[in-house]
Length: 420
Ligand code: LLP
Image (cartoon, rainbow, N blue to C red):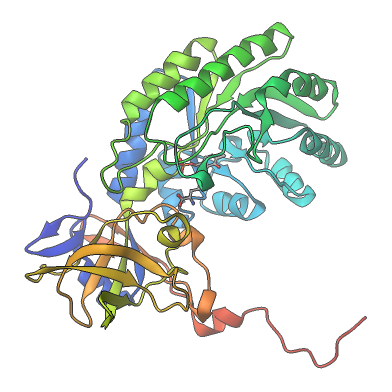
């Protein structure tokens, strides 16, 4: 896969469009996505699973922009949602409800009802208490809920603790040893129909072994459940395939597919995949402009107009994302911290980074920002959320306008009298 953000004549581009032109027209900060890169990554995953009955349910939490989701849906993707808002977005983007799966530990009654009424493919159930609620809501709406339990195989995904979900001590799923009892309970309920087993152990996995170990346990469970008389037709293997931010060497999509195939391919089930980051992360950049440079003691700071409210990953996970000047690099490299205007010391995009000299007004591009960038943005410090742009070849469009100051106070009021 060629770099969707090449440097041509010294200037960084999104496909064939200069990032500087987008920044000029739309303002900064701004997220820029490559439609070609999104399609290539989606198609590569499709190709890796060719010959295996499967559904790619794109994990919308990684990048929920309607244009992005629409492009993937047009290529045949389903969607993995985790809230009523994500369900709404998926449907708005044109997703087929019969390809939507719903995961998440805290589904509310109204969310369950909305998903039932939409006619989704699968509820990934995270506790027995939730199973009973789904059964009750399905009974009230006169619909039957297709369910899989999310089982927790107690495998260490060897990733950041905040994005590890498959350990025994995590809040997700049910312990795999308790699954047989939980499925027996499900079978006895009138308004749920058991169709499968689900498992997602974490995100940004760069090794294959945790996937293989977890799915081997899932395969054993599927055999056990079938012996107990359950019709298991689908196995949802979750998402989690890692990407290159820096020096990581994540498995290729083909290597990943081989491990999934070895573990669960022979069970005559439809395989559901829930990839997020592996499709979107490296299809996006975050572009920000230099405001000031300053030295405090022996530290050199580059203050930019993008902040932790726009891109929280560095602050929240101490994650590394490459940063480079959009224009031709000026000569010498210095060690700097790239920080935003938010009033927190945790507000940084990069620490101790080697960057060439910069001047006020220069643009910087933060790489690998297509996943968990805009979707995690907030209005903290009274900062409107920025624009999103989609590029295809030499063409581009604003796919989300920047928020206005009025957007910041929408729905708020100063009451005359308090009631009650
Ligand atoms: N399925 C389920 C049930 C999930 O919880 C997740 C991610 C995915 C699929 C997609 O995983 P992916 O393919 O993107 O690894 N904000 C963090 C990542 C949180 C992941 C949450 N769950 C970050 O910026 O690194």
